[in-house]
Image (tube, rainbow, N blue to C red; front, side, top):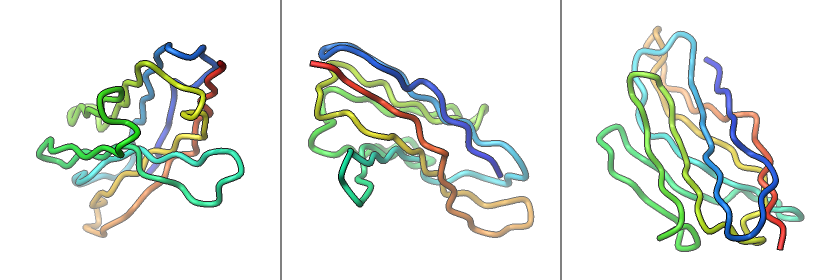
Length: 120
């Protein structure tokens, strides 16, 4: 199983970016999908937003009202629309996908990370 992220970049404060993460490979089903981030100098990744297979969403307080997570089950893809970006949003963003592979094993997979930099 491979996760490919895209959409990061450099943006000014107040701007927008849309991240995508596509899963491919021997997939039977996908359960929860989510986005995490690791800010410069921080050792831990923090949850930004998550979405279940049924479409229920969960957001970090810092993301509420500005970010929207969505998924396209036909494309095995999760998106993160980020609006009104702030310098504090600068981080490497990682997608996480919980899935069942074709051999019916439960796997947790991480993307390679995409850099988001917000300038003031």
